[in-house]
Length: 302
Image 1 (cartoon, rainbow, N blue to C red):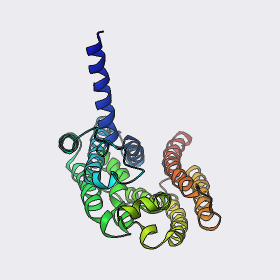
Image 2: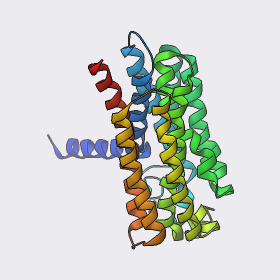
Image 3: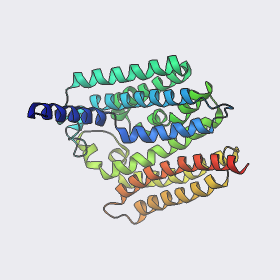
Image 4: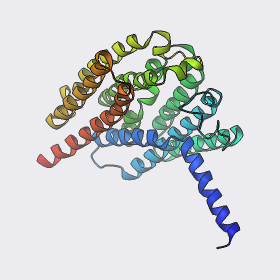
């Protein structure tokens, strides 16, 4: 292989890495895991594997599209923030037109895939989630109100419901319980990061809660939300979706989240806010793995 071929290969790898970064792959992966749980808990007699695989592909593409649009819309403030100034657009690795094209193609592909080969309900609901995050939150709410995360949290909480509808073609109250868990989890998750990066948000005039209401108020809000989250996490047990394996796991995980929130409020250290943020990610992942484990272990026992 000559030098020119090596350079072309390295350039292709860098381009692939750049566009992958635009989709926020770690966030999308977590969303897809929650969608898989929604699919698995849905009451279907013969599991539709093809629709499930195509559904995950379409949901993933549209989630990646929403993330890329978020990069595009936030590129100017990203340039000024320490946490985000090295993202592909602020750093000049890619231009706005290319990102617009990439996000549009990815989103359209995902929508068509869902509409034609899964079902229209899932396609339209995924599109609403995309618009809720990329347009309503990123373009308006993020810059308009400290309750931005609370109001727009529903858009990011939808994957379990999308997974459910992908394999059933219908809405169900139990699926909304899974949405509610993520919806209540979202504010304390993001507010912990906002406390850690409060000066970044203040610098670019983004009215995150610790900027507008102060860090102490935000800490109290995080603690209260973790208590509320614990109660919400019990609901799937009360309606008979899952059993004791999930309940024990949920109580343990929520106990950990409350511990971090309590420490953040009453005995914080320099990294407590970021530690709380990191724990919250593992907390949500653990909850949904517990839902999955409980569901399948119960089937084996029965």
